[in-house]
Amino acid sequence: MSYPLPKEARALQAAVRRFVDEELIPWEVHAEMNHGEVPPEILARQKKAARDLGLSSMDAPRKLGGGGMSMLLQAVAQEQTGRVTNALGWRFSNVQSWMTEACSPYQIETWVKPLIADQRHECYAITEAEAGSDVDAIQATARRDGEHYVLNGEKWHVTSGNLADVIIFQGKLVDGPNAGAHCLFFVDSDTPGIEMVRSPAYSHTFAAHHPIYRFKDVRVPAANRIGEEGDGMGFTRDWFRYERLMIGARCCGAAARLIDEATAFAKDRTVFGEKLADKQAIQFMLADSLTELWAARLMVYRTAEAIDAGEDVKVSHAQSSMVKLYASEMANRVADRAVQIFGGRGYMRENVAERFYRELRVERIWEGASEIQRLIIANGLLKRGQAPLVE
Image 1 (cartoon, rainbow, N blue to C red):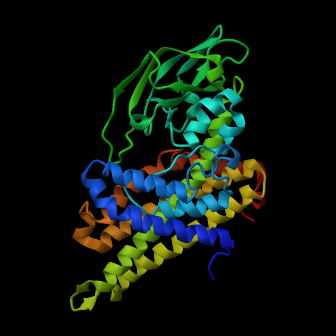
Image 2 (cartoon, rainbow, N blue to C red):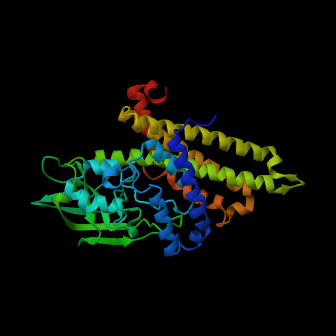
Image 3 (cartoon, rainbow, N blue to C red):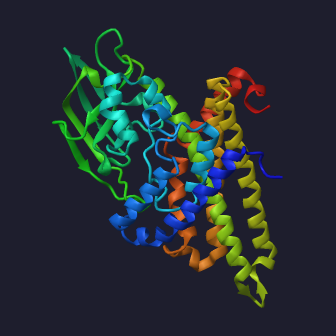
């Protein structure tokens, strides 16, 4: 029995799957061999197709030009985009609802609406050399100076920094009644005092890079502050909760693609006079992979439904961590098995298993490493008991 998804979700699932199969997957190898790039006319076509499907800012309200989708619909859509490598699924803006709720009318007009319309592009400057999963350990500062704030600090792994024209900067207040609390700011990328230190090479070959930026006495108007002083960490938790669930969804899509590809290869490949698929060792790897995928998918869909139903946000926070932990580690195991099934072919960059083997590794790190997810889950168990989390 398949999961009882609403008809709307099944229709979206089928439409996004066609988009991925027809518009994105055919360009994977080209992107792999060209530093994540595809021809400009192909990129434009892919982005238009994503917009036509309603994927652009699917979490943002319709009144601002977003998709206004439920969390379940978003998980279903992102699961399908997870089936493609080289970040080709990143073909749409992704403004989240927390931002539309937190921002002032001025910020909505200046940044949020253009981001939703794909006229501007953002990146998040949160992580630092000595502060990754432990966001509270950041050393970046924000000091009030009249009607401005002065921002200082060095930010690492600023994903899509090379493609963005606005940076969302997180820093700690250094004075005033909220000293030590976190704040988020919109900072236009051309603001004086921002320096790109370097853009390191990573295991994957995405068109979106992850540069290191240094902020030195960067002045921004107080109107650029998102929410009130001290609200920053709450917004970051909202962002993490959403991203962790969607990472889980995309990992399910990756695992499903790997299982399909590895199964097809095993049924076609002859070894010692028999089909590879007839070998019990291969059957065990495929069986374990399929079983783990089903478990992860159930977790993703059920957590999305709980969020849509308005269930306790603290419970959803822990469950989103469970989703990310299990789904990301599941997908890594499936990728490892797929490489083994493909054998030498699985070590070639033109092979989907090789690319996913590299790309999925980061899912256990960004938006909170697996170890941090375990701490969050354990904290929820100790505070609330087992029943609210899993029954």
